[in-house]
Length: 225
Image (cartoon, rainbow, N blue to C red; front, side, top):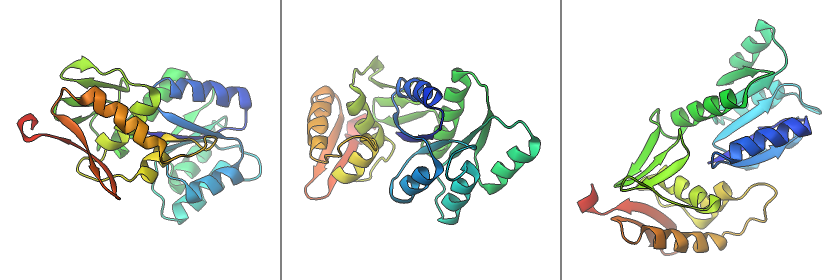
């Protein structure tokens, strides 16, 4: 799953991004409101974590413009402002949660996971496809009750597929969730990750089906249902 982190303090942004990436998330980092507004106009994210006090365009304006476009991606606002009126303003503009600085990384991680559970997993903390399970609380996959060892990119691809059961995902759609803004997006590389995942799933009733010219779908055989 892909997160946009918008924070203008470089050291804080780096530490937050590192902590979130350690949980298996793809994290893009931007440091001003105009760049965030542009990214949110033409990129898809599962969650936005955004500071209020941003240069060029503040977080409230970015949020207002985002909601005016009809984009309902969950937004967690970060702020050093403690006034109730500021929190109310953010929530009225469409923020889903609010976290005042300073905060513990563990609290940020918990709030991020809670928002992703509601938006991606419909409130559940697990997504299943037969004996394949993705646990959002631990950001880990298991297969038949045993941990499934995946690289970060393999996990990113598989998490997109398992979150959309029965839906064919194109290489371009998968690439948009797997590669960050600073990466060279290469949809053809998705084929490599799909091949590796198939090898790791080959002894299970879970498989990745190719629909030529359309993309890939994750499914479990009837015996596994």
